[in-house]
Length: 259
Image (tube, rainbow, N blue to C red; front, top):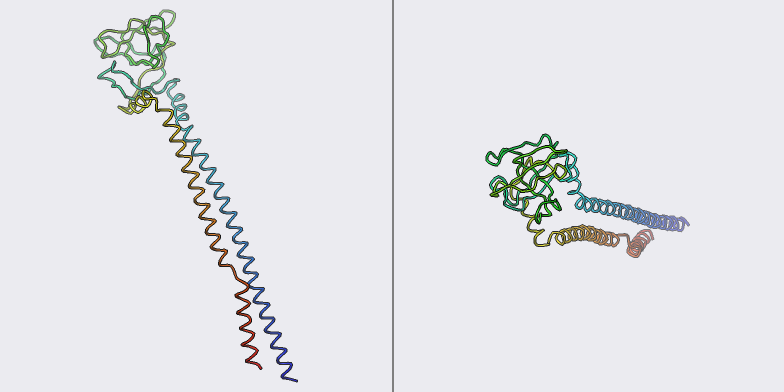
């Protein structure tokens, strides 16, 4: 009788232990699944942040140069704060390819000079469709002031330092874009080459497309790696069949021992 109750007691303990083991493993599996969901949400959140950052970088890449140009317009008080020298008319003072910084100035304050002394301010002006000019260029002209006078407004007579004679038509003050206040040698050649070859717009499109493709590729690649990692983690989750076999072996061993 005692032996019979002992067997029943042992069987109950074994079954209880087996259920406890299953419950514990199941709880572990639930926690693991919850952890995977949390990681999935974190990965999605990270991907969204990367997309937002990518959009900001692309917008900045397109608008950054315009922003810098706008800041220069405000600080230098002119709508044309930078120009590139596209001819040799001001050599050796200014060379073709120089990037010039231009500052707006009160016409009355623009310094007058002489052809011999070359002490006048170098101004940038727009001669396109200006009366008296023969075939004027579309690009702004950079010449030195060699004379000026007032006649209902300021007028400036200009000359390129390398030119044998001065310009035959005076420049009215409303055509003056500003006075040259600084330069960076040779950097303007990039603009000249790209503009003359017609590659400026295509190059901007290609660089922008490569930037977008690179960012999207990085995001997709990292997401794929994250999904592969999750699949590997799922394979490590408890296999009930394996645990059941182990539980059976435990029951057989315990039952034999107490028989």
